[in-house]
Length: 194
Image 1 (tube, one colour):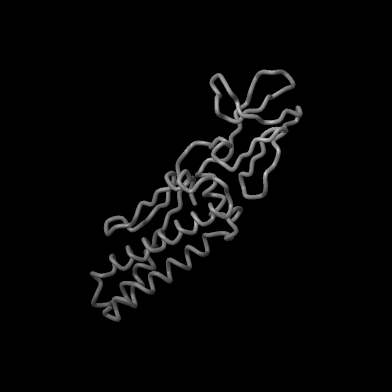
Image 2 (cartoon, rainbow, N blue to C red):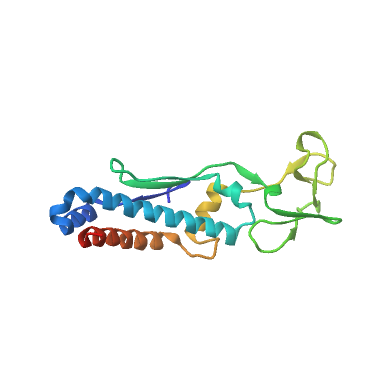
């Protein structure tokens, strides 16, 4: 995973091996490889979305609209899953107001009271530039107020991919194994005449 995207591609050695297996049907090699890459990208995207539901309390729609899949085609034999977006305010996660301050659950580990070093609890602002957001005083003084943020979608996706969140483990070996399994299926499909 580079930055905020996951890439799927097949190296030259694998491409040569596929062409050798298909022998007289070399013209079908690009289609087989494209299909295998796209099937792997789709399955990985599903795994990432499942990791979101198991690891974070952000709403599915908010997460999914920040993640896009660029599919492989005959000219470009690679697929990419990209994530974009800014850091999210804690209002977009599971948050509850109580008489003792705001409690939030970002990573499905239970609601936790938000208290800083100065002993200030979080609360929902009712006026000014931060109206409707959860804020916290930085000191014992009334101002300044700090708007509370959590991770951005690219960081969440990276943590799911690396196995830190989502209860699925590191996805890289899974992706490699699935890519070669899908490629093998495509070759068998062509050779079997299905």
